[in-house]
Figure 1 (cartoon, one colour):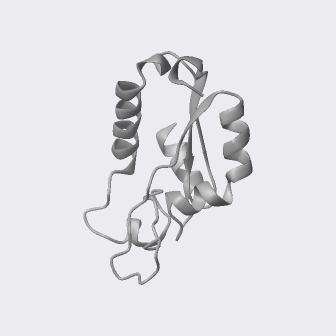
Figure 2 (cartoon, rainbow, N blue to C red):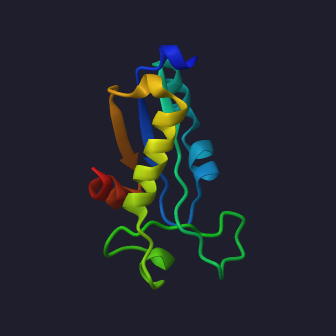
Figure 3 (cartoon, one colour):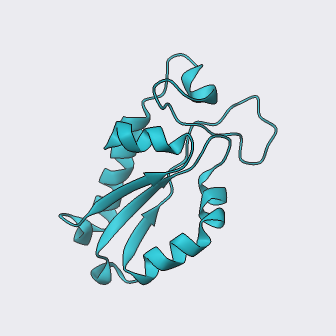
Length: 118
């Protein structure tokens, strides 16, 4: 939908070892329905594991106590601040979304991010 028709936004946090592109692909039915209903979709990217040879770089989130590279690297990434920065950028780019609902969802390692950001 055009910006003027957006009713809100949904942040969808991928699970451990995935990336935003893979999550969007695996959730294409969700994406299609959300877009049909007028929601902007945001698929943030977790922290890549530099030792990974996978295309997605086995990204994870600093979920506090879980999971992967994001909770073993020091200093630990501040994924909450990162997400708030993405939100600020979204609202700057699409000011029509100010005051509109913002939903968070995630699977696996993305689930703790929903709790931490919310």
